[in-house]
Image (cartoon, rainbow, N blue to C red; front, top):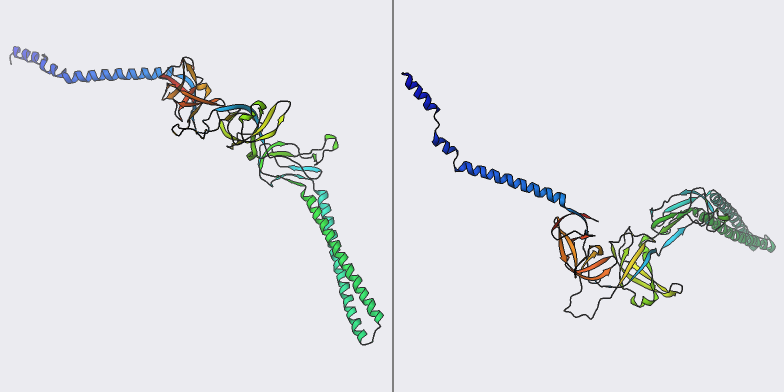
Amino acid sequence: MPPETDKNALLGQLRIDRTQREADTGPGRRLWIIGAVVLLVALLVAGAWLGVSGRGALPVHTAVARPIGATSANASVLDATGYVTARREATVSAQITGTLIEVLIEEGEHVKAGQVLARLDDTAQRASLAQAQAQLHGAESLLAQYEAQLAQSQRDLKRAEDLLERKLVSAQAVEQARTQVAAQTAQVQAQRRQIELTAASVRSARVQLEYCTVHAPFSGVVIAKAAQVGEIVSPFSAGGGYTRTGIGTIVDMDSLEIEVDVNEAYINRVQPGQAVASVLNAYPDWTIPSHVIAIIPTADRSKATVKVRIALEVKDPRIVPDMGVRVSFLEEKKAAAAPTQPAARGVLVPAAALRLDGAEQVVFVLKGHKAQRRAVTLGGASGESRLVLLGVSPGEAVIIDAPAGLRDDMPVSAAER
């Protein structure tokens, strides 16, 4: 083959095919590149938004709007303060004087009626019971002896009467036999009375022994333990202060109620059976439905107040005696109201959730991770809560103690208080 032909073949292999390059850079490859760029931009924007929302969320506290019924929706006509008291409370002591050998209670313990609380040293009582039982056994044995003698005397009398009919004994012998029977009959009756007396002594000794075991008079909770093992307890105060008069104090938690002193100038606003909203100082966000039990018909001259008893309609372990409580006496439902006017209903929210914005009362409601501004219509007050008639639905989370810079639709990070 000539040398020029070889050179031309080699140059042909090195020549670039322009039609192939145009095919490689056609419309499909360009669309793929554009799609990759758009996806990358979207990922960058999403990451930036997540970073801003996570770092820029304003921390806030929330509380749940609580629904109320028509009765609770009534406005307060009078506010007062008082304390939780127990109508059934007892300091338990022994009925006899003795030394404690066991104390089976501690403060805060729940006890049942009849449960053993403590035991006294019963050595003397057991000895007295044993002595009384021995006397009873001796009296019973003596009675058996008297009854045997009486039976023999009755048989002797019968034989004597038979012999008298046959003229074999004198009438005087029969009379003596009859006298013997009568005397022994009286002796048996007297011994029976003696047995009754010794049986009563046994029962008394048993009672004294039972007094050495102290039982709970009713079910409740021990709020105080007043004595320890080794101390002397007595139902009477004696010994110059060295003798305990009580072992412990029990409170029936089902008998808890509220006592408040109402200024006599406003007592006309309170009626028996009236609805009351009670708020414990320890739990300011918890409103307890209550009602008036009675108005004590006497006034305190030094304080110019009248005592009012209030029943708690909810029993809860959080309620304990001597807790401070604020009560709001609610106005009565108007029975003569027009049927076209529905009863006032709404929700209770903490007063700290309200904010005055110009002439409007507003709250911020948590929606997702953002604060939503709501204009609200207010009703009456119930302790530290306010009645919201319009603007908030039951169960929604409202922001309390909202920061001054909080605005509508602002990202927030919420924690329930």
